[in-house]
Image (cartoon, rainbow, N blue to C red):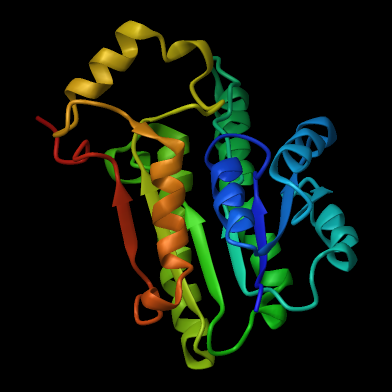
Length: 239
């Protein structure tokens, strides 16, 4: 029987590839994001199993307003929405804007939705997978701190959901091509530099991270919870 899957940040990059894999497997997928044009384009590309839902997941009012459009039963929730705050500058106001922005876009986007639909997660087989980053382990200032917060939260979430047979896990990618995260910064020289930091001598692809997400959403991963699955080609270990 087809499952109900919700993928946040599902219009581009990793989220798009996650949605594609679920849709290709015949699952019913809702992709959630802030940009209607991007979501509509992605849904048209992925086919009739995919429904777009516009919502600013860092806004509690917007999350509440979106609940009626989400499935009454959710088998898989993929918290993929996130971005890096681009506000820079000196002084405490600039620092506050950067840290608050990273926290809102990367932590609240996962926590507000997950807490709002906890009672919809399917007992015995529900899956929550949250996409983090290698930055949570390597630093990277406010962005890394925000992603590290997801790791601590996931441990708590796994303990809360475990008695209901629902798992909660993290996928932590390294440098991945084909996303909007790096923008023009990921030029040929930067790709070479980052590739040299891995054990495999290359950066990752969105589909490889999506495969890790889909594994944790599978029946075979039913005894895995509270874990962090690193998907970085050995970049965390360095060379």
